[in-house]
Image 1 (tube, rainbow, N blue to C red):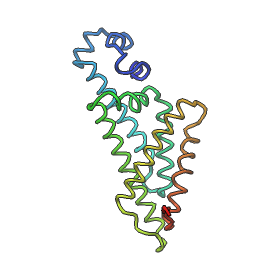
Image 2 (image 1 turned 30 degrees about the vertical axis):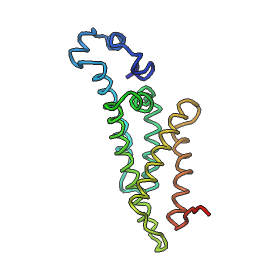
Image 3 (image 1 turned 60 degrees about the vertical axis):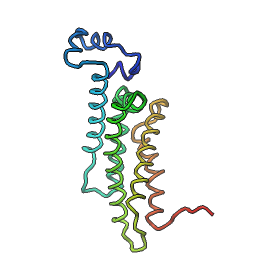
Length: 192
């Protein structure tokens, strides 16, 4: 993961990876037939670890905003503690072809589904009678936007280096949850 995260898929060599692992290059090829298979295994492992970190941090008994806070904090903490893994998922896997991008897309789809579910829960919790029903399409679109914003914020956070995981999560909560609150109260922006 370290070599792919720091040097990129194309530049990383199997010889370098084997050396860092303390094994021979033929041994790496014995277990994984190609650099592509090794990279796919790294992408899959990191995607599962990130998704599990977020999933395991959320207590479903809490209100939706506290669940989102816990998930975002876990997301930003995981990406901060695993910068090479995040580089592989966010920069490398998406740009080096279908098998890698599909692994990331599956992880992202899981996160979008979880966030859409939280938005639906927030709409039910708001249940003031004035709250318009959020269509499934709206919830999915909002979830896509929130996940994309988290990914972008994590990338910026890594480059900046001065923003804590909690501060990044708070920034996104302020941006998204406050706006979502208006939507749940029936306020919608319209072009005039």
